[in-house]
Length: 144
Image (cartoon, rainbow, N blue to C red; front, side, top):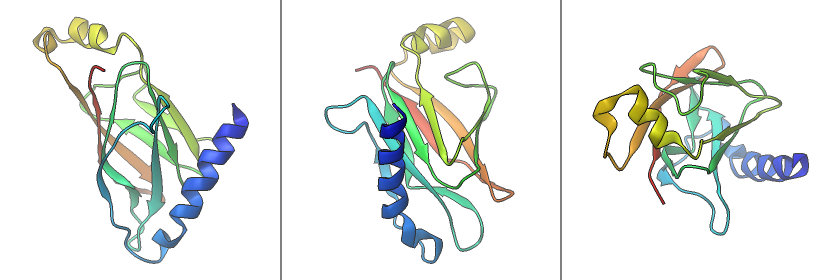
């Protein structure tokens, strides 16, 4: 498990190595890698010192995971009192943060907010906090 984190982390850090000095072109959305249940999101600090994600929106299904790879220290902070997990703030360890989306995320959301019943997508606004600054991308959970 640890070795896969290093491989994913190395891949993204190498691919984003130029982002610190120039503006990277962001993809609009990212989904899980083919043949896996994992989506990768690279994080970098732009030339103005703000943390940025390599994608504007990441789309996953219940039971899948998102691996965030970036600066040594960063936090993911869920907004609007809405999170796919129990915590609203998650902190990276050694530049890697793994977010496992619960298999019963739709049932949890239906229980917490009755207006969600029957919806085919859940959106989570979150912030990336690093370098003393914060930005706000989005996670979408859709059934498989």
